[in-house]
Image (cartoon, rainbow, N blue to C red; front, top):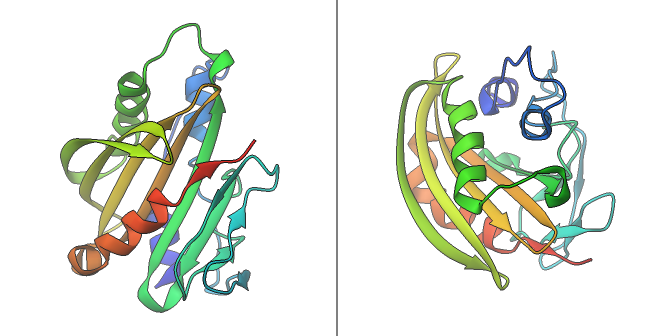
Length: 193
């Protein structure tokens, strides 16, 4: 089950524009492909934050979540709750890499690239949020990839120095029940440096 969710998590096929910072940022979504269901994880205690390797960002997921090292080798934070098939990654881009970009433009561009790789994608949103004092925009995306129906929460946060793209997902059959938990993990995200 995990392998199929990993492979359908986000698949982008981008062959051009290697010098475009936004395209390079979106390429970070490419999942690390695995051939086994073995997962490298590190359990955490409830309330214990999961920090990015660079110490810039963190999330504080609820009980049952773990640090994950096998979802996406380009994500700054990777976490999962395998028991409930819940997954989360964060991707960060420095705003100085863009000549001009707004929160909505960033969300639209990255969502568009995600949706272009999926079948039967239906988006709802935007919902404007404030996450730890920073403006954010969130969309729900229901789509099919590799014959698996997935529900995504796609959230973009703008801070004074970065755009943070957060992607939380599960099977569509679990999305309504688990949406609150995916949102709670997303809303726990914060930039700490």
